[in-house]
Length: 263
Figure 1 (cartoon, one colour):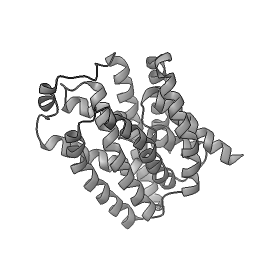
Figure 2 (cartoon, helix red, strand yellow):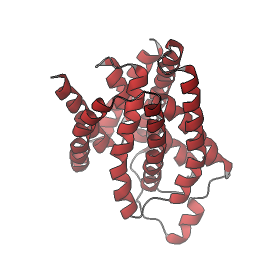
Figure 3 (tube, one colour):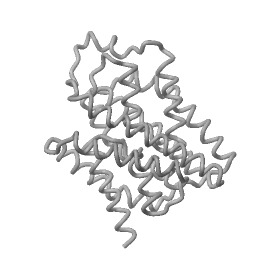
Figure 4 (cartoon, one colour):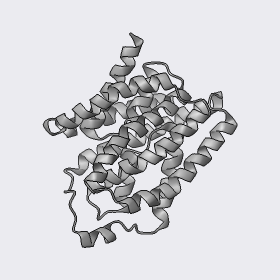
C-alpha cells in the first residue's frame, strides 16, 4: 500500500509540473519529508535524480524544437557545476546525516521554497507569456547578458542552492534569467532553464548517491508515477486556468517553507 502511495505522489507532482511548469523539487521534497517522513538528506538526494530524469525528456523535445539557447545554458553551467561539486564535498566532510547538516538543509530548503513561492506568484502577476519566436538577427543580442560574469555568478548560487535543497532550478532560475536576459521571450528562457537543470541535478544527484543520500527503490516508484503524470498534465495544460493553479501553489509552497524553517 505504501508503494502505491509513492507512485501516486510521483503522479500528482508530475501532473502539476506538466500543468504549470513549476519545478518538481519544490513540491516533491517537502512532500517526502512531511507526508512520508523521509529523512531530509534522503529526500533531497532522491529528488535531485527524480528531477534529472523527468526534465531529460522535456529537454530532448525542446532541443528538437530548436528553442534552447545553448550559450545561456553553458554560461550558467560554468558557475553551477563547480558550485555543486564544492557543496557536495562540504556535505561529505560534514556528513549528510549529521543533525547540524540536516538543520542547515531544512532551513535552506524552507528559504528556497519561500523564494519559489514568490517567483511563482510573480509569474502569475506578470501576465501572458510572449511568443517563442524571435527574429534570428536579434537572438545574439538577446542572449548576451549585461555582464559576462553575471550568468556564471547566478549559476554558482543556483548550483549551491539546488545541491543543498533540490529546489531552485525551476521558478527561481526562470525569474533570474528573465532579469539577466530581458529581451529574450519567456518560452526560450524556460527552455534554457530546463536544459540547464538536467546536468546540474544529474551531477548533484549522483554526488548525493556517492555519499549514500539516495533511496533507489523510492526513486523508481516516484518515476513510475511522474512520467505518465507529466504527459497528462501537458495535455490538460491548455484547458486549465493556469493563474488559479499557480496562485494556489504559491500559497502551498510558502506554507511548506515557513514550516521547514520553524522545525
